[in-house]
Image (cartoon, rainbow, N blue to C red; front, side, top):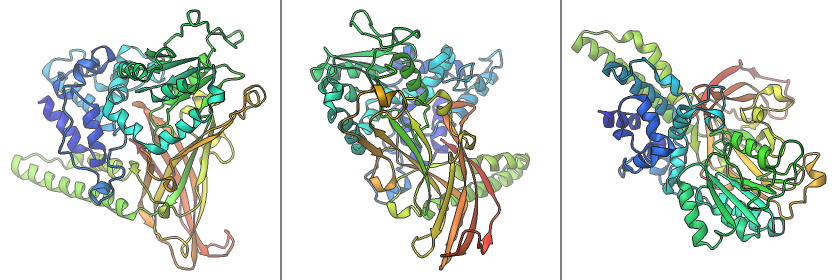
Length: 528
């Protein structure tokens, strides 16, 4: 049954990802088997009819870390893995083919989460692409359950509150746009800080809740909630007497301050940065406008996370053992040899258990060396190409790391690398803005690093298939690069290509006085 197919998705997923996928794939069991129906059901015009139909599972098993007693982050992080959703779309298509419901024999590949030009669907996608994007991404943001989770992240909230309310003199009488307003709290703060006009832009039906929040907080006369993709909306320029700063590019650059909470896991996941950049180029005053946050930085560091790493290795081994038993029983009971599929099954399990990053809440003592900044973003000048990922070809230091781990100062072994980000709210640093834009009086900072405590972003951990031991009296060097590229079938998700080598030397010796030099290792991890 379709309900059974839905439950199968949950059974395939790690416990840490199940709960939110359950809440975000509302209505899946009510759909027909055709992928066209699946996609159409999640499209905004009809999504509201299905979003309430699929109950959140009360008995879902929490993640291992929460079972162990860590309850601070007990709400599952936002946007659970969508890789199994793509599998569902393809599976639904196969069922439709068999049932004759798909006469053109179209597969789930046509529902890749990308436009025909390879862009995020909200920019230039057709209705089918936008429907898929809604199913894979936006639908979870249409639920108050998800909004509450982000609003309960106090490190997040405190940073944005300080950036807005702590800079009321900058906001006074300004035109503000909140991109992806959700339930609208940033827009409320902007109005309370003295903004003349605030445009709260929200793609999903959460816009209706945002309107209620504005009215309940007495700022509906200042805040205009606009439901739609920010790439497609227009502002009431004449009605609100909005004055542009622009040149020949048009009259729409009327916004003084653009605020957004756009960051995903490891900063880029979800690819909302594309929409923000396009909104900036269309609406923000280029010389005097401010982006909040104004800057972002990505970091990696070596970590000790051996318990979690070993669990993944064990689950992979158990999956392969279960496969062997399955092959034997299928052959003995039904006379069919499935051994020919073992290579493909092993690849799937390795990608899932060993080569997928994990959401983690690391402690500061698990970080074994000073983090390396692998890319910095100036939000006033970064480009769509910057948003697509990062490559070492971009310039010196981009994507590069070089760590020394002293065995007498760090508790090993090295289990892998972890990635996180910081954002800053401060004055413009680009050539134009540092001259023309007003200064940002009271800078604010938000960090998702392990030493800053819980955030709903956590850290992304990339476990090595085998850990790297630390030897007393010696320093282990691990150096290499990390590159991020978008997944072809879903442009909101990324792959991380890790290349590194290790060496050991006596502590205090120079880096060329090596005792052991390992070969270069290259692994490709999914960031699900």
